[in-house]
Image (cartoon, rainbow, N blue to C red; front, top):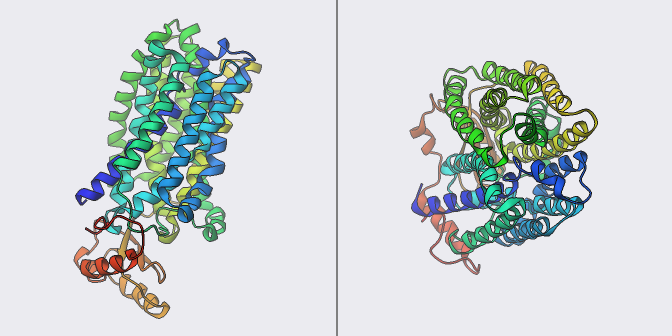
Amino acid sequence: MLPGERRAVFSLASIYALRMMGLFMILPVFSLYAHTLEGYTPALIGLAIGIYGLTQAALQIPFGMASDRFGRKPVIILGLLIFAIGSVVAASADTMSGVILGRALQGAGAIAAAVMALVADLTREEKRLGAMAVIGMSIGVAFAVSLVAGPLFNSWIGVDGIFWLTAVLALVAIGVLYFIVPNPVRSTLHRDAETVPAQLKNVIRDPQLLRLDFGILSLHSMLTATFVVLPLALRDYAGLATDHHWYVYLPVMVLAMLVMIPFIVIAEKKRRMKTVFSASVLTLGIGELIFMLDYDSVTGIVLGLFIFFTAFNVLEASLPSLVAKVVSPDNKGTAMGVYSSSQFIGAFIGGVLGGWLYGAYGFEAVFGLCAGISSVWFLVAATMQSPRYLSSHLVRVGPVDAARARQLVGELTQVTGVAEAVVIPEDGIAYLKVDLHALDREALKAFAVSDEAVDNADMKTAVGEQATAGHSTHN
């Protein structure tokens, strides 16, 4: 990447990570704190943990569409302010209803789609995939850090202090956005990074994509339901003091992240994606069964967590990769938008069901539910078609008419390694599915418009706009 692209991508990744940490740091500690709140019930614990997913799922696509109309940065700042307000509401609350309201507001600051769109504005097409990978890694790291940091900060400042901290982090993120993230010369629709409403029907009707959407919904349902009760089991049955919970989470997360790497390599490089994927789904269920049978032992919980998070990490990395492999190249942004909404709906469902089952039937019922979800998911995954091992690739071909677009499709698909091509005339972009191992990159470069032509087009577009001169994404 060019220096400006690196600055944009890593600063936006930090904003995304700060917000995700604010959402996830309470996951391993809230159940331990909830009994101090007025109106406490087990069912409301689950609702408080999962409610952010409902508002996030409902608003992330509208926020992304709003950023097309009103600008990326204003919409992201609005979302971060809503998130900060929700954090303050939760921090100030002494009732369960107050915390639930705060968590709902946190989720309502749904900036994910707008951040992805801004990343796309600030990176060249050929660097887009790498930029999105950096964002994805930042999310994974933020989640792992949150599980360790939550218990640590809880011992220092308490759960209400964590909520105050997340409000501060949101304001820091606004500062990063304002002072460090470059201003785009122009914002346009990016079909590889944004939801296109006209494509929603086709994406929702695709049975292969639906299987993957069900998968991410199941994965985050299991995660949220598990953490409604697991911290309580660790404290009340396994006898580990709250201040020491991070002793468990830190080594488990580090080891699980290391162990997942060879499985990802086998899945991608050895082209055993479906085998590794299906085995990981079953492995999640084994982890839940260990929790169910041995939740009164630190050893049992540690073993269950290690097995669970090794499989969780493999699946969390594999699912978006599978979406990209399955979907038509020009529908990728829409497919990822539906996939992301499914993830957050899963967090809400898991919280609600986990809290209700905990109150009605106890810990075993929650872990049993998660094991059952894993079994159903395995049956769904078993019917999945083996994916094509293709990657998304973009080529800017410049403005073309419909006839030239059709001609380009034929020419591009003749290039070695190009399996599928879609050229959208109004975008001036060729959306490709390619085999990276076989791709003739030099032949593909012949279709790209020259840097000089792109720069000239950008300069003409920028005339009269308020964007800062000299910060073109191509300079």
